[in-house]
Image (tube, rainbow, N blue to C red; front, side, top):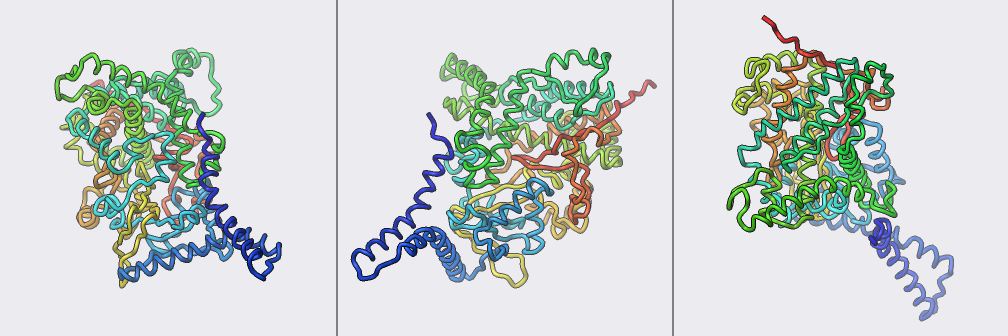
Length: 609
């Protein structure tokens, strides 16, 4: 029987809490026994109670002193620290503010406001930092992100804290590992993504056709559709087909109706097949996968004390969800392993050749079933959620910018035509399509906030005039936001908060992006750069072409949007992007729209001339 997470945490935390008071009590007993001094019982009790808090204060001051000393020896500065209330020594109010921001405010808004006051890099001290004796560092500075992801890659890793928070869902897969294990996972997947088959157009065609047919059927009976749900199904089925050679058929299930629809008898009869499929087995997979990610993110927000929050003290809340996901993955892995066993050392695909699916490639390098499941689940997060996120926000921008819709449709019709399936050659000539997707990724990157841990001391440059470089102590955790970096007016120009795909086509490319390419990182960078970047561009472009061929006049459907997912009124008074939003962006492991993206659109009228 597994030990509950809360018990493990308490046992690990016990020495931190009990050793100082125990030693204090022992010293006072020795003083009372072996000296003429007689320490009163009330003073003994007070010293025992205060031993841990006082030692934490001393340790924090000592750590700050040693960091200052080390920084001075290197002729660098310490990163500025966010001021706390005088009675908030351990940062509880800062934590409360971050939790409130995640629940009610715009994404990363607390960090944005601190950056306005302290600059693009600063430290914040949270309660969990007291035990580790390290603050968190936050940055949106391209040079710092470049250092973590590329030039000082070996000095920064995911770290043990993040590993524990994500282990129940991701195991030891490529996104949740460091060092040699990460290198092994990376080397397993790389060959397949370097091949021409990333342009899996038959796969895209099959699932895009199914998705858009469901949309057309639902719209025809007068209901808005949740486009986010639709493209999540499209990308899930496409990703599982690509990875396993067999999709989970989530598009066979019923797509959601707006809240509390009242269906007429004729509408019910028209949707009989959908109602029969509302309990489709894939729903369990989809729901468990989404809930597992959401619970994992709650752990990340809680930090080291996650076993004490979210109802996980007595049991791992993510592990049962992972088991549901494994029900769909494990049979495919087992069959692939059996095929390999039957074929012996020479694979059915030919000795040394890559298989028809990524899974077949992976089993040529390892037959460890746990490692294979970990890797596939990690790649599913990347292959499904990031692409679905970008397609969701793409339609949001098309609905908000009709001129962009018209321009993109003109390019699609000129390059592909009204009916033909697009090819990779078509996409190479569609400059506005790529610029449009890049602008969506700039304002709404799939992974808006990420983090690393310094495995050894590092020095970062400072852009502040007259300032020295910054010192980064070993063990400190770094939070970085490409979302906020992508929206900085000093990096992208005064119109950085505006949606304008032409910034990737006109002179602004040479003015801003070419001199500093690390200001645009939707797919990460350095050794951990996304292997599926080109696959994602191909899949997103393909779906948008099919969408433009079949639908027009995209409009948001606020009447169908759940009331609790509409932007709060106070956002309109903000000075950032939130003042423009008609939807509520939120972040779990990837970015999404709270409550779904409910839209209406019209079928394209085909010319009969």
